[in-house]
Length: 108
Image 1 (cartoon, rainbow, N blue to C red):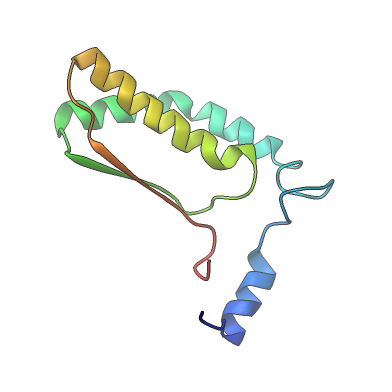
Image 2: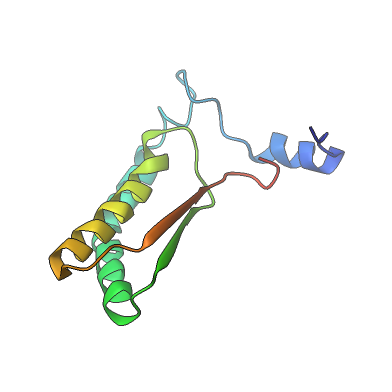
């Protein structure tokens, strides 16, 4: 197991989210982020269809570089996965392999 450097610890202390439970947690205080996620849903769906119809990939990567411990963490990933499978069913194509990466801080 690696030991975090002083700089990594300072970064963690500066940028980490509050733990996933309790009154001050991100999970309990992320309604603004949820609203923004909702506003972008139509654009995500359009982008999925465009990607699949113009350059049929064998593999697709989905990355959330700001994931956290809240319902928002998996919502966008779930919508993208659902959109890929819905589009491929509609087109009667095999879906691409999906690779999902979730990360919050570089030291995680």
